[in-house]
Amino acid sequence: MQKVFRGSVDLAARHELDRLSPTSAITVSLATGGQLADMVAIARREIPGVKVSEAGLAQFLRDDPESIFAFQRAGILLGGIAFLYLNCRGHDALLLDDLDLGNPSREFLARSDEEVSAIYVWALAGYGRAVAGLGNVAQYLRKPRFINADYLAQPSTAAGRDLLIALGFSPIPSFQPDLWRYERPWNRLFPHMPAPIVSAGSFADAWQ
Image (cartoon, rainbow, N blue to C red; front, side):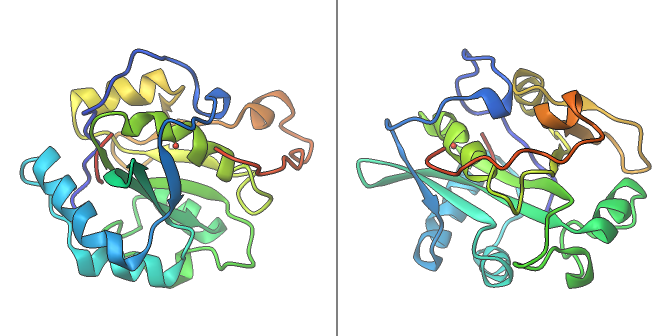
C-alpha cells in the first residue's frame, strides 16, 4: 500500500501519544472483516490517489486480529488505524530499508505470543472526531505484548507531519527515508530498566 499519512482531523489538542486521555465520545474497537470495505471507502475519499484494498486489509486482519482498529460514533464508522507489529528482525529491516511495507514477509512480523519490538503506523484514515480515538488505541497498546515497543511512521503529507509532531514523534536517522519515531515515555526515562506493566483498561487521521 502507498505510504500515506493524511491529517484530515482536528489537531487542536497537542499532547504526546501515551499521555492522551481515552474518550467515550466515540467507540474504538478491534476491526472486523465486515468493516473493511467501508474503511477502504473512507481512505479513498479522504486521500486522493491512495492505494488501499479490502483484500490487503483482510490479510492484515487474518495475520493479526489486533492490527486494525475501527473508530465509530453513534454506529457510524469514522475511520480506522492499522499497524505492523514488528519483531526484532522486522525492526532492523525497517531501519535498513529492507522491509517491503506494502507486503511484509511474515518472518518480520511478531507472532501473537511474541513481544513486539516496534509498532509501525501502516495506515490511518478518518474524519470528524476520529482523531479523538487515538487515546483509546494508545491505551490498548500499553498491554504487555506492546509495552516496550516504540512507534514508527512515515508521513506523506504536511498535515501528516504536523500530526506526528503534535503526538511527540521526531525524525530519526535510518536508511528508511523520512522515518519518524515516538519513543515511549518509560523507554526515555529508564532506558536500562524493563518497562512497567500497565493495565489495558480502556484507550484512539488517514490511511497508510
